[in-house]
Length: 416
Image (cartoon, rainbow, N blue to C red; front, side, top):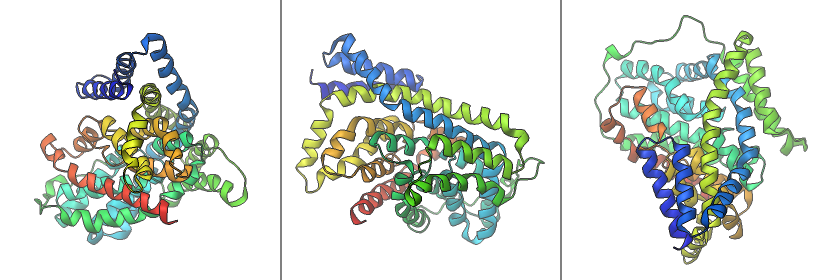
């Protein structure tokens, strides 16, 4: 069997198994194994290609585990909630959609996972939504859209893995998508949300908050840790001093524990961050395995040849690869991993600069990360009590935000 077709069948098998609730890492392993065997490679070469794919992403996995210190600090100390609450309070109820989108964007941009960002902001969104009579679907798109914008400029696993696989500094990939993220925020608030049907206003009995008795840390104390991380990463382009993300990310987390005056929560923060990042790291082992099969197959050549018939088609390979792999896995992290690991050589072969390629893959991987076979779909719907049918109705609008980010990233990399 043609190796491209075999790889597609293997990927399709993995998707079906994930939908059937098989743990994603095992589903991806089985899909990779099936793809290699169907290609006629035999067991030895198939396993060898799978291991090769995993080896390629090990450095990124180490950095992702290090990022758990910052992520855990933001969640456990209440820093994430403090940042969100401050933004919403400053902008006020009249700008509820902008406030929620900006809060979600900033949380993700500082290193909070998008599902955690939405879950953190959701109680605030419900309270203010009841006060102004805003429909819940609109509030959800504001939070999700803002989170997608923040995700393409964040030190989150998707950006780390894209930077690693294209061999470029993390901060360069973050900066490359800054303008698309800002414009994407405006698109979310002033173009996508107005397109949504007039929904039913929320009722006041949903406005009860489950906030704990402990006071939240100050805004500046909360944001200090992420700011230190950004400053450390910025030393390379500004002064030629290289601070690896494996150092910068934990440093920001530890500094945040100090500035929030939650040093007693150090152990809990580390445990929380490690738990969250460990699940990502395990997932990446599976994505690395199937990426190894895809990279060794002829699928990249088929896609490049197909796009080569279009004007500028080769340059579209980066965002398209991100979109396709994101759709397959319903995960920004997994999508960015498979796309950048499998298609990096082909993308760079079209003449695209490495930083631009990483940025476009990363943006493309946000387009369809909300599909029902992924955890993000269920986590975000569940945190506000949405039924599956109600949650499904948000998909077109989420996809529109993601597509706008992918397009804006493509345009930005070619204009600047």
